Amino acid sequence: METPNAHEFVIVGANFAGISAAHYLLRHTIPSLTKLNPSANYHLTLVSPSTHMFWKVGSPRTLATPDLIPFSKAFLPIADGFNEYSTKQYSFIQGTAVGLDPENKVLTLADEPTTITSRTPPPSNPQSTRTLSYSTLVLATGTTSASALWTLNGSHENTIHAMQELHKTLPTAKTVLIAGGGPAGVETTGEIAYLYRQAKTTILSGTTRLLSRLRPQQSEDAESHLHYLGADVIHNVRVTSATEVEGGKTTKVNLDDGSSRTVDIYIDATGGIPNSSFLPKAWLNDRGYVLVDSQTMRLDIPAERGGPDTQDIYAVGDVASYSQGGIFDVYDAIAPLCSSILIDLSSSRISTDKDAAKEVEEKNTSFWNSWIARTSAEPQQKIFKQTLNTQFVPIGPKGGVGLLFGWRVPSWFVWALKGRDYMIGMAPGLVKGVKFVKA
Image 1 (tube, one colour):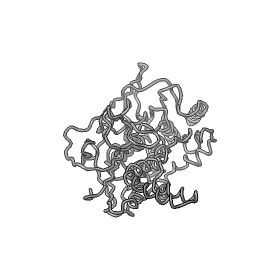
Image 2: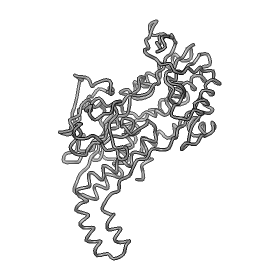
Image 3: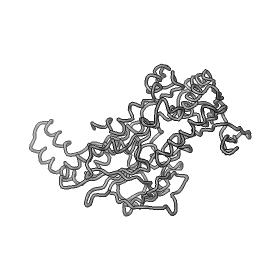
Image 4: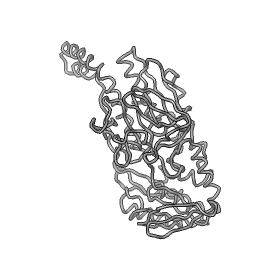
């Protein structure tokens, strides 16, 4: 709900990036703006097709069995994390962005929870729509995977349903085929191969090796882990199509080498598509990600390409061009994003304060007092820096492979840090924004 005569912050997307940005803005950025201009009013609206946050870090284990990470821990109500804010500060809208008018600063929302990726355009006639005006817009819409197992494809209930169907078939499956040699595919292969020994589990890397972002040695180690669990690994073959046959009991998978396989269970873990088709195409790169400055999260589109005249739109998280898809790329970008917003909104006020600071500086002879006078009125830009090659990939419940700042870590370390419970204990903290209690 919009607050009359207030500066309206709108964040589209409410999982890791959107929730984190909302808490930081409400706790730090908006109070700083209020200090600069006490007469102004500010309000933040969070928009998402899902009422629940999904701890997708743990999806490989949650989809394999309901016993180790139950749905009650993997899907948490967003509302529970925002009880500290009044309705004058914050509101939530369940809906999907299907259109944007940057000239008039209006967002169009479809009330029915759906998914709008860069490859699937918004519905031409959605059943019910509403408009939402914004003053500052943050795009945190993330990506959508081909399977609802990995990301929120609309409402969180869609992902729960997909997992429940898998839980029914895994105990009796004889063949499982997983496409995708990234962390999601490798972790899922490890979980299924360990838990369901009766099934022959196979993973297609799609390239020359597993985990292409890690070093070749970690790729070999990952393959050895999977072989030990009884899984097969096939390289240089990709899926071209998959069709359910026998009334949905099996799936025929066609491969790009001309062969095909019929399996009891097929899991597509090949990655996500950015949720960006409601945006102007000129704002996207060739893969559909929103073009941003990689250090400040500001929209980075030249005017000749259709960029907005004023700086009031930002993007953060998996939908933005700077991101490599890791959780560090979300968390480490929140402070730079919010400092950009603070600077952009306070620039006119600061120009006046600088004159006042100059007068104070002239009256102070000491370096320390002069430095305080010069800097106290002006917020500082925080810069995003990519975390040096860090990734942990559990393979089964007893170990895995990984790098920490480029250094190889032992299998037990991966288990201790992530593989033990996929860090599910951190999920409530994400919803409540505990990482951003301090600026």
